Image (cartoon, rainbow, N blue to C red; front, side, top):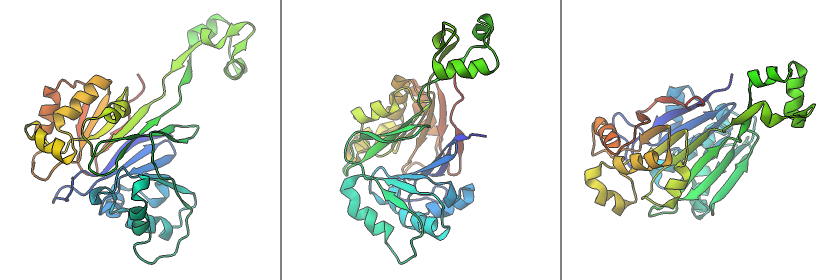
Length: 301
């Protein structure tokens, strides 16, 4: 059975706390796993969450600050230790190539797995599969940073009453789907568009065009909210968002489920992030992420 869910491995910004590990997020999308921003300690968090190296198909790094990338060394070595049988692709800013190479070869180990390096240096699609298109958009941070968006292709939903009205049943249902018409009946007459699901991952950034483009019409948006609103000037200075800013982005983009994460250690209690997000007018589903939280992608409308 296909599974689409976010597994939160860590939620701290800059430094871990007693209750929050450095960043790490796994998106399960049917039979694939995409690991985003593996910070220090990600390998251990994977163990605690029941995530195996074999579950990974892609690694996406937004930027090369340590809380988003220091876990690469351990994760890559674990992939090789476990002899993952399939190819794994790594996406990261091309400007950080030297950092990726240092982390990939931080210590001695035996390479047993095909790890494809696919650096990012421009907006646009990175990969197309039958299940999704993966896009990147530039963000605004003191070092080069990209956000990622996964879009499922639109499909068709067959309408049983329309099929019955035209006497289409059994193998003919598959035939009209394949051929686009049957006995003069067009596919549009007996089906409707089933919109593909959308997921976006937005980490360290100020407000910018890339944030809004990534968030547009998302079913599930994972977005940093390092600061509370009273520290908005500090957030802008360091290239981050506040809870209210993140929530307004989600509100204006029509996001169905908003996941706030990447919290500064200066705020010991998470409840205020939820309060400020609601005060900003976001009315959809809302999760203030905790380590090891699992968030399902919302069911289709």
